[in-house]
Image (cartoon, rainbow, N blue to C red; front, top):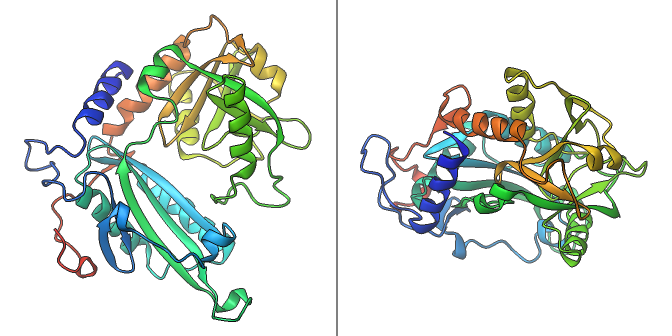
Length: 338
């Protein structure tokens, strides 16, 4: 699938959220909740009705681990890798969702099935939960686990990707790895959010933060690549090891485009001939303006376009993707919902 095809599919999805495909072998059933479906407390429900307690430590302290996988044209992309990363985050934070890997995977399929979505943003979260009344001992908390599927989310929309996004290099420092391991996907986003609000004030679409030494780390929900001196550079440290980031490194090797994980400076970004960001929420997205100045020619570059086409084409490859189980019998926990 080329990016043109992918953009067309995105527009169709926006107009026809939840529509059923005519192929009964792969199509979703008539959706129950096209705005999104959630699973919590052993039950599926419309995403608008999903609730957790205001006393949950995921709310009061952002004490949680999460992961997000996407579905495109009825197939999860790199679901195993996302489940692996979620399990690693849970172990690092000493969280227990109370469900095994196969059960979590079944719930993710069930959320997409209930929503009837062909293109979806699918999240899994485990919070510390609620403490025993009157206690502040974390060991008394009963962890909370929930999942949801909503229509596909874009960091940079298909229309915006045709011309490329603008990016600001923030003066705000990313939370250091010595304080919180960036390999643990978590909700500590205030540094990212404040940086993004400042970027909006400067008419930029995206923002990237630096570490204490001044090296580039990541942006809100995305990794960064710059084509400098004949190779792609992406930060090796201070950043989440994104699944889409991994795909780009692999696809770049297949395309004969060297990719190196290592230090990336602000000067590297500013002198790069091409810059892109990667995320589950949108794939490979070109950046054509940095701090108000054009990147390369000021248009999405040929290397970025080639990688983007390879990325979307890989969604049909069974090595990378898994068909959503739209017609699987509902588990007992669904309480008979259809």
